Image (cartoon, rainbow, N blue to C red; front, side, top):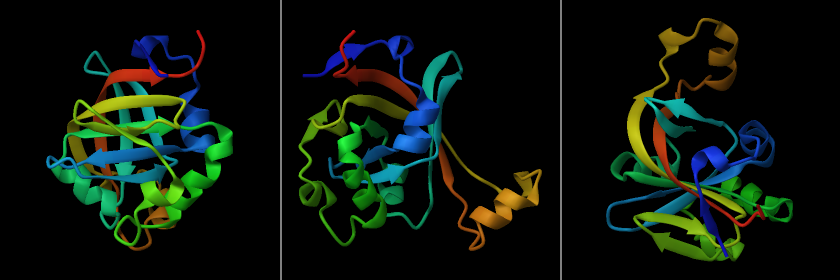
Length: 170
């Protein structure tokens, strides 16, 4: 059973969680349909005096179309034994498969968000700013040339963290 905590009470290290453990980002269209994708880039912090997360989605990803028209995303962090779920959701497109069904996830719909009962921590977020990574913004050529040889620059979404849900004991 999840319990709600304030964002400032969250004790996990987001650098390890996002960069090493990964997260399942789920975007929701206004009609309630959703699509999850694995993310290993992102950030958590404070902007405009609000707790925020920043996520990056390439335009060719199926989840991008959900993120563009919807206003809600969730970031779900799973126990280590669910790493294969994250591998699968990073490899397979929602255009080709029902990833939630294939992974045996239990979706929960709440306040315009979709998240998964199997997660141990969930960030429920509302999109507040969108922009794109621009090639002229790079101060060094290496990341631009290495990560964007096809010039498919990520869209950047800054999202206010509205709720943090956790199963961890206090």
